[in-house]
Image (cartoon, rainbow, N blue to C red; front, top):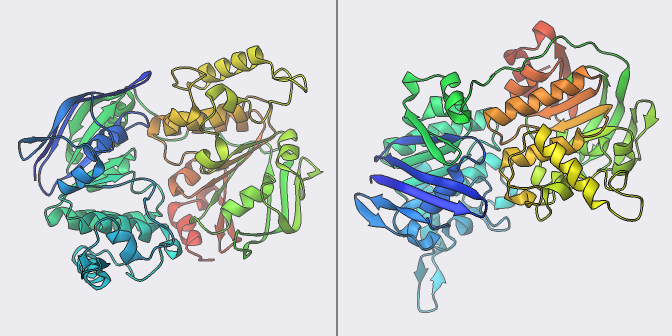
Amino acid sequence: MRLELKDITKQFPGVLANDKISISTDRGEVLGLLGENGAGKTTLMNILSGLYRPDSGEILIDGTPRQFHDPAEAIDAGIGMVHQHFQLVPVFDVVSAVALGAETITGPLGTFDRGAARKRILELSTQYGLQVDPDADIEDLPVGVRQRVEILKALYRKSDVLVLDEPSAVLTPAETEELFAIIRELAESGTTVIFITHKLNEVLEVCDRITVLRRGRVAGTVEPNSTTREQLANLMVGRDVELRVVKGPAVPGDVVLSLADVVVRDDRDHIAVKGVSLDVRAGEIVAVAGVQGNGQTELVEAIVGLRTVDSGAMTVDGHDITTASPRQVSDLGVAHIPEDRGRDGLINPMTVAENYILDSYHRKPYSDGVRLNGEAIEQGAAIGVRDFDIRTPSIRTLAGSLSGGNQQKVVVAREFSRPVKLVIAAQPTRGLDVGSIEYIHKRIVEQRDAGAAILIVSTELEEVLAVGDRVAVMFGGKIVGVVEGEEATFENVGMLMGGAS
């Protein structure tokens, strides 16, 4: 199948998301769609998959113009999309989740032919190397396996074009490599894959061609063997981007955060953090590495007062925070950048200005203790938008309508808008493009150099090694090693992440 999108234009209130974009793919090709958050990648693919309708332009399949009024029409035309946030029913098993909406019905009572569906899923699993237990419940599957189920769901519907939206955003490095192998297998079998990402290494490794979008337009189309990471980054953001973290040596001062034998339980009441002890000093960045699910989330939530500590002790600047509330922790000068900005960092139906004061609305100048000062709030938010380069039509724009990178900038601007002694940053650049990553790292280093203690938690090994002055590795709820200097190598930290001592 040859797919063409010609002069696609889509405008939302205050935002021209797609501005006469034209791309094309051939059968069995892996096309990378690269761009910053807000560049228009997902909007374009939502048009292709029938979720949005373009204001102008056309979609051609094998030279024939097609119009999709809903996702069902796009699926019937052979377009399948795996969204960044999976569309699976957690309580279903794999067979039911994959076949939902495309069930084979038999008998006079219209019964779902589960046996036929299960057989087809096993055939697809074998054909494309998508090993999945068809009888397993979705809620019990790891994230990487859930993604395979999403791909199976598209293939089950006989998709000739498979769109993968930020497919590696929630995967470990090993799961990402498995995904690349699956993509190559799909392409070799004739499936066209459109690979949406902002990660430069990934498009260079897995794509046949790369189309770069910038601010709603095509900035260029290149082949991986004739370009570099630096050139791609320049196309993405329109300027030279520093792909390494620029920082001088740390000058550690007094201990700001002290953890002593901290034990924390997870949501299932299992012990997730098993006696963690760690000190973080003023003027240094301690990066916590580890595969997701080794207790990092629970540890961060305990430090900032969102989760109860079973035993052990925690102090900030000598103050006991073991049983402190989130506001008490915040009032001690602790900034918190949560790992899920949509769930814990922002209130999407509220404006940028309202989100900007979420942790200081009760203080002057934003409040006199009884009433909010609207003028002061607007002035503060306007300064934050300016100083942190938040690209928003207005401070009255709803936070949920911003791109991921700009949402993260709102969180960082809020947390850094007051004097802080300690920064707790969990996955601070997850899902961000190179320009936003460069910016967030720069701001964090500025806080370190101003004397704050920084604790960063990240599953991105490159980020851990680039940002951290010391690297602590968590595995199985414990810190299995702390390395720094020449010992902090990709190999050493990677082995510790896998459980090696």
